[in-house]
Each structure stands twice: as structure tokens, then as C-alpha cells.
Image 1: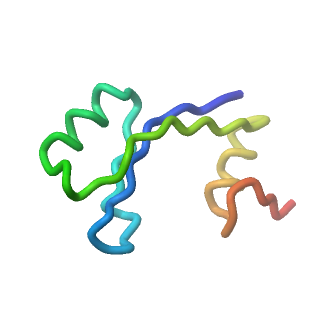
Image 2 (image 1 turned 30 degrees about the vertical axis):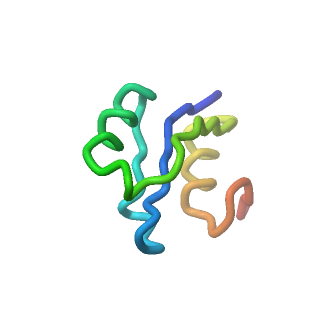
Length: 69
């Protein structure tokens, strides 16, 4: 299975909770347009996972792609 989303990093501070994460590039562009100086480039992120449990384990781990099981 595959999860695709669009991401832009918040450049003012190192707080990842201010990053842009959206389902579509159009949404990401619209959010970034409100404060273009605060965000880096918009990139497409694709996460491959076996099932919902695999995705949950990947999200809960410290590193991308690391699995604790």
C-alpha cells in the first residue's frame, strides 16, 4: 500500500509541528502562499507500507522505515 502527501518545512525555527502536510500539491501551495518566506520547497512524500499496522508502527518509531517488530 502507498500513502502520498505533500510537505514543506517551516524554516523559521526547528519546530516540525509548523510544517505543511497536505493531501494535494494545490493545498500545499495555497497554505505556503499565505507566508512564503516561512517555508522551504514543497516536496512529494511517498510512504510504502504493508498494512495499517505496519503504517502505525512506522509512524510511532523514532526513524523512518524502522520497525520495532
